[in-house]
Length: 307
Ligand code: NDP
Ligand code: OXD
Image (cartoon, rainbow, N blue to C red):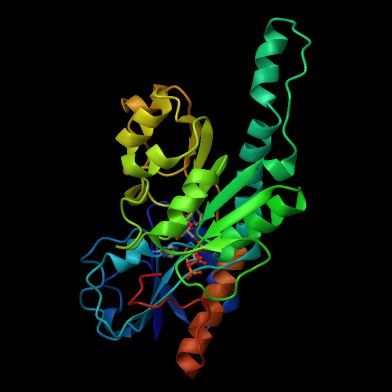
């Protein structure tokens, strides 16, 4: 039995070293033709569609990250299970990223930097944190942690999720109507939904037209959820004062993309939260042991829902 590895974006040697420490007796290889029949599990990021052909005993495809859309888009047999990474260090990083941008806007950091250029000493009125409303689309492992961080600093939080179960101590909405409520009331919108057929194209012209004039967007979900032309139009029209975007259709973003110079847009190179190799490989190794022993897997997705 063996584990297959694939990624063009990660340091595979580091994965192998960590996995060998955890699973010294298991064969680990990144060559698909090495022992295709022996592969029970594959650990991948952005694998091509044909990669698993011949791996007839594959039972589990594990994402190296939180998202699984790079796996759910592949033509995988229905019996193959899919797991992902849920790790507190990713939640902490994601919360740092989102708080950074909310605080920077709410406390006028850039306006003060501009004033400093001109040696201007002028206080800009700042609303109380409880009057600054932050909407979070997606209240899962990451969104819930961000909500806690924001609430700790006094911000008013509203969430949007799919199911209406287990409401936390702040308003949580569901459905199209709920989405509209969040869009209309948010001073700052944070979008971190998984990419599924139900979330595709969510942030379009109609969505931006509902948002408060001068509001801000942080988009760390997937590019399929965001209409980038509508985003540019909303920034040009001042509907959005600022957008921070961490994810793009094609990464790295083309050097001739007009997005680089779009006023009001801040670009980061898909860095909001990065899985740590040691913790990731611990989860992956544990899932391998569970797979072999028939125990329930950690962080398995519902293949029907796609997340
Ligand atoms: P989870 O699966 O834990 O949470 C997903 C949340 O989205 C849940 O609250 C879920 O609702 C909600 N949701 C799913 N579908 C819908 C829908 N159709 N309508 C409304 N709400 C919906 O995911 P994570 O929090 O771990 O990660 C979220 C995403 O963040 C990842 O899929 C990935 O795309 C992105 N990400 C980005 C990173 C970056 O660096 N840019 C890093 C890591 C992740 P419910 O609770 O009802 O199930
Ligand atoms: C992830 C990501 O899904 O980095 O982990 O986007």
